[in-house]
Image 1 (cartoon, rainbow, N blue to C red):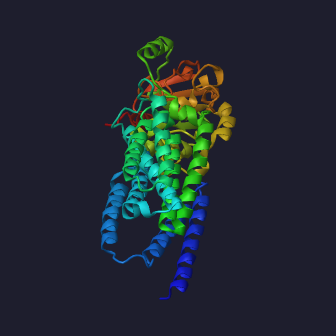
Image 2 (tube, rainbow, N blue to C red):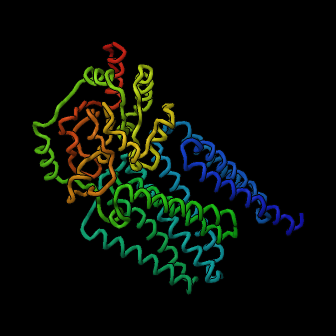
Length: 470
């Protein structure tokens, strides 16, 4: 095959792949078309892989086949054995693989060519390795915090922010030096090691409340690293796909920050949610003697006599894997003529869209899922609002206390419903580490229970049974 006609065909395949990626991202912006968008994007990826495998630079397929088998097996096992409730961890792990791949490509190219590289190519390789390495270890740290393999609370030490900033700028200075002196291989490998260290240290002081923003930022870093890889390998589709990933991840991170009324600086350096022993004691005093507990039977009675029920899912729903029981409860109430809606906060859970994914898995219609503003318009009309494992996103302190760490954060106004039922295992604070006045309001009842068990007992009571979930 002649080179020029082949390259024309290859570029056409890459063009189609890029179009599919764009259409896929567009489809994923709406729950109704998200599944279709996912399939379109997957088709684009298949085209990109096929096109790349046809490139004339490939002289042997043995290692590619081995990599395909290993990677495909890992992906298959993750898809089979990792439940939807663990999607945040899976995504963080995927980001780490992407970052490592970009970093290894850059290291390989530098090892092969080293001092022979021009300024432009070493700049691209340095950028690729820098962000790829940070993404790799940063995503592994995020995975560890999400999976609670390491404490999800902020881990801080003296002069942490200053030392992290110094380390990051040190890596930047090394990168700039290498652009003009590419033969300094010892500095290149030192930069790689420093970037791995930076990835660990920048995520260490970030608490669970900020994981949605962190995941988006790491997604953006992985995209930027992939785009730089495209420049290094002269692969157009990798440049386009990386730019799309980097741009969309950064925009989503901005939207998540706004949803929490937080800045990037506060997310990265604020150690948000650190809880001291003194704060725990103050919270105990805050709730003392003011909590009104309830029972599944009382909650069932309230629901039987309601016309509109608003349900607010949170991270506790994912932890207990209660989405299917919640779906059964909603279906039962609807069969009795009760209007049931789900109020979804943009940062509920551990990643953007976390609650949407869980509720979709439980078969809850998209039309029943409401965003922040329409939900708040309906709360005053709701007879019962059920909060399942949510905390900070329903905390009235965001409206009422200008000195609160969450002041100004848009929240779901569940306290404006006629009756509020909070299903929670304890009075432990949310990731923000502040008390929640919602729990002691006159119209609030606390059902202390695991979300799955509590919802099942409420459903059993509605059905006229006394069986319990074991």
